[in-house]
Length: 128
Image 1 (cartoon, rainbow, N blue to C red):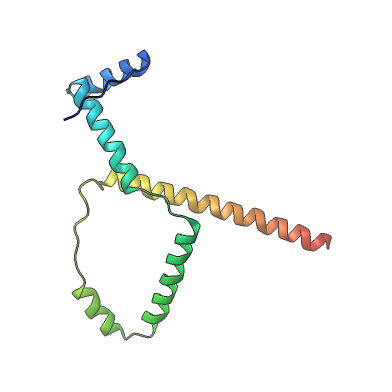
Image 2: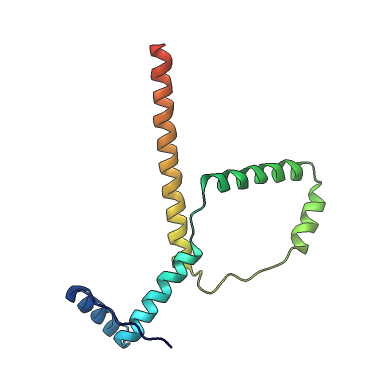
């Protein structure tokens, strides 16, 4: 185990003590728990570049087109033969919900941007 000395604002120190008391844990235990949780969530939920997202989207469309030509019996056989993987224990329903919320917010933001771009293009066409 390593040792780390931190200087914390008094208000943060008091908040951490309160939270540790609620969890019936020592301040040290609670800080280790909170840091571990934050690092784990940061590791599990990572943003990807637009290029990576576009590449994945293109590969998915290609797969859909390929599967569209595949008989349903073959798809059913592949699905039953696929490897089953248990979700990671850190990926609980709360973390999954937060991820889904982030994705929904990103989609809404993207749609709004697309609408604004569309309006700008319409205005440019009308002016031209």
